[in-house]
Length: 191
Image (cartoon, rainbow, N blue to C red; front, side, top):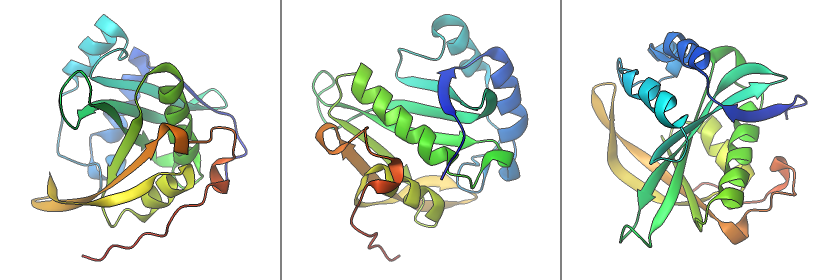
């Protein structure tokens, strides 16, 4: 559990500089988020034009007691017609020194609260590798439910990987509960 002040704030140019250094290697990005070298020109343009907000792909910085700890993102996903089937898919990336302290759980919980407070979506979803036990626990603590396996959905490290699809609905999220108090069904998936 986190005993520090985790907050989400708009991303700055300096934050992107830190992310460039930290996430441009497998050890920095983690095995589950390393997709090879990625240009960041698009992120910088999105920061300049819209602050990485109010688009199909969005980002906020995660700060702990005022110090940059990582980022959270939310991306448009659709399950049908464009105008009526929007949901958000969330993701998080913590800087290496901040991992393993519950900060990712607190940050993603705050992002879900933010999205249900400031957007009209009914559903927030997340995907993760079946071997990413830390992210699975994180999503379960927030109240996400496992919906199933998306087979061979992600190319990473020279091969296809399955992804687990989780979601939480607006009326299932209780922002007043501490993130560790939410009970979910245990994960039942075998490769």
